[in-house]
Length: 339
Image (cartoon, rainbow, N blue to C red; front, top):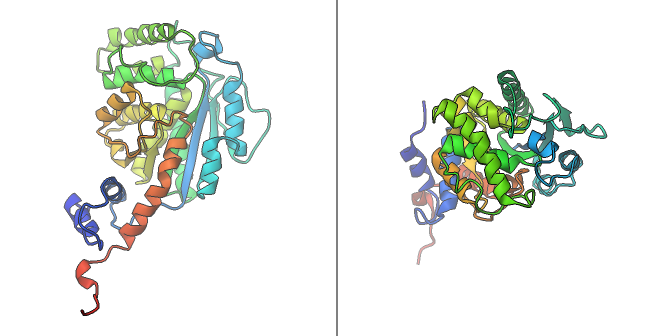
């Protein structure tokens, strides 16, 4: 039997505070209860799951990317040198980094790093589809498997991030074809320092997405997604869909995770109900993507790392919300001293 929103609200109103006085924190608590279908949500253990891959246009030097940078970022995430990894460890959040397609494999083995590479980077979307349909499905399956394994490890909450130079441009392409974001808005706001000439970025996005829209219109199918996707993005989308089936809480990081959420919802409708948007990155496209999903972010810190830092930043508030959900008592049960 499912728990109705009014039942959740009745439980939360039993806290010894004026109803509604916790504002967005109260909304977060209700969100957790709805996802887990419990008025005593469990949010421990939590796991930060980061997928890493490279993109063909960056590998081929279309942008000012340093070759091997994605690999370096992945290695730092594995050994605990990245900001999100450092803070996750401080909060007691587990960590797993999955190589699904970086151009240069890691220079060492590490217990936090799994190699499930589909190919050494996608193809260059300037000229051809990023990946084949079979590669898209393989990437999705990697994500599904990783979410299943996270549940076996006991994770109640998945915090999702990505590593890969050029991921924000891929997210911009997906924003246009899956969230109807106008071409004038897809590259607005703060973005990674990848493009010396932002007009070049817009041209690339427009050229790649025009191919998809001319073939599919706005009824985007798997082949359309494969045209402009990244291996890390489709893997994350598969993880989201599987986590929703498992009734895990999924905390989205930034714009790349939100692009993966759009894919997850397109390919597995209803998966968005397991998702919590940590925050907004400050770009118009990200706001429109979240609106398409019907998600309201909880933070406005404009974190733009996409490696899970935004999701990790929200986690202490998730812990707090879950704690007072479990301890809610009726105000009528309180005993006040006479006089």
